[in-house]
Image (cartoon, rainbow, N blue to C red):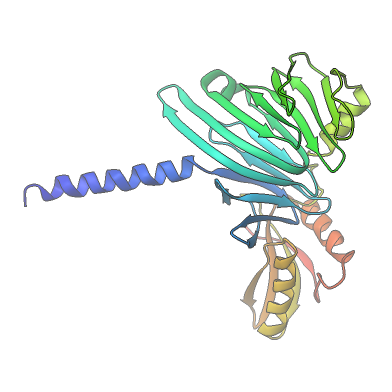
Length: 295
């Protein structure tokens, strides 16, 4: 009996450690402009702020969508529209001074940006490899943009340094701001150059979440009531259609009717922008749509 408190203490400590390790091995969704999904084992789940993506997941964004992730070391990943990102290895070690991060990602299609924050650069160590169609990008703490599609790969450096390892085993180092490398699949690899100011603005615009454009965040206070129905079956049908297309809709009974809701928008302007985007698509907006403040 005297050993019981100690056993309970060890059990609780093990549970806390397992919880911390599970949390540390994930990637947190910080902000989304819908539609977006996480895919695993053939199952697609609408993405929303606060969700965790883990190894073996594929994160996908739809038309005109954006996704912002926070990694365990405080650095950030952004995805543009019609992107697919496969999450491979995640190895995280908590140290006395910060976090050691070792991660492997594969950009299957779309636009991508990685950025280490000022604090994460000072306190954490990272190894993050991004696989493109014809190359692998290795970094040790930097800020860069990358993309891949059916025709070519491209990489542009904003800060720090990246090493591009091509499929021909050639190593190309980009270590100056605006350094730009592009590879068309049907042509030999070319030497790096420099992106113009217009190109840099375009690269950023493809992945940034503009305020008021339909952004949802973890502590967002604005709600879009997509539709109000008298019976649950009609509300469930509307919610199902939204969820199948990458919107995390919920059905809630309120004052005798059934509301189909999209929550957590960062501002009224964001919720209204999302409502306008749904209006442009057939069958995704119900009766009496409106925007309300939740608290």
